[in-house]
Length: 226
Length: 164
Image (cartoon, rainbow over all chains, first blue to last red):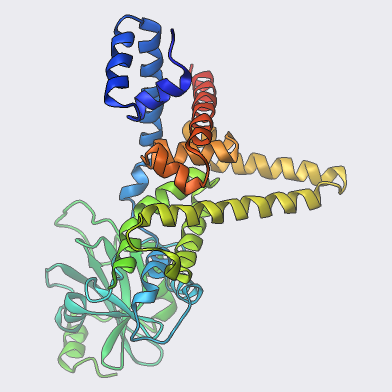
């Protein structure tokens, strides 16, 4: 007797009992049509996996990452998930970042409705020059119309790029975006592979030209005083 | 970070995969995942420790998706009695949506009836057991398996027809 489609599916999905599986396989060995049907069902499962599994390794959009951790941030005011999502949308429209925004873990923490650089990112923004190598690369340094300093950054390990501005002794991210490190090249120039969302934020913030190396060093040595 | 929050963050990639399997395109999928996470946080007190967290949040996504597809259909039904032009517009929009769906597999999935698409997404894409998937869908296991069989054969018919 040919097994029902339900039995074939249950076999392919690993839902048969051990005894039923043995019996099914015995039947399959002597029934080429059944074996072909099993192969057909397995091929379908493989095609579905090939179509959808890549999502698992894609960066999670910032809005979603923020929504997922919104309730963690109990130090901040009670902002609904919608509020966080709206904030995220302002930060980087359409940008996707990995799970960089996790309290006490990632380079950014959400606090009072803002994304604050912490840990290594904060230290790098405060002390590093564009010429310095490290887990964080600082790109452009520039001033806003209000006179404050902002700097772009890239983090290869976190696959994250952004721009942060000095604000009350901290660095507040104004835009963050997913970023894939380019292939190593001795000829890369600062800003050449900065994501469009970050460049757009720089354009909206910058007053005048970006600082040259001498001005960048002077600003750092003065402690980023406006 | 409490256990629940941690679990939500850990589950985000799988939530996005399930949303992609259900929604019509990537943008709708991320909206669906977002709504699911927001609802899960709003109703966090309803999750009973000791039960499977992924099943619980998948059920929230299932309900959110059904709400959305029903709302979409209601909007469609309200528009339907209008002039013929409306329907032409709808057909145009559907065709445009179809073009947004990349890949044969996604297109075949989007053509499945809702209940079959849910069964296929949970078992074949998310890898849930029949028992777990039936629990997420709140249907008897026999109902789940028959939807699964019908969904499979519809997908195969669609994809094998598309093949050269």
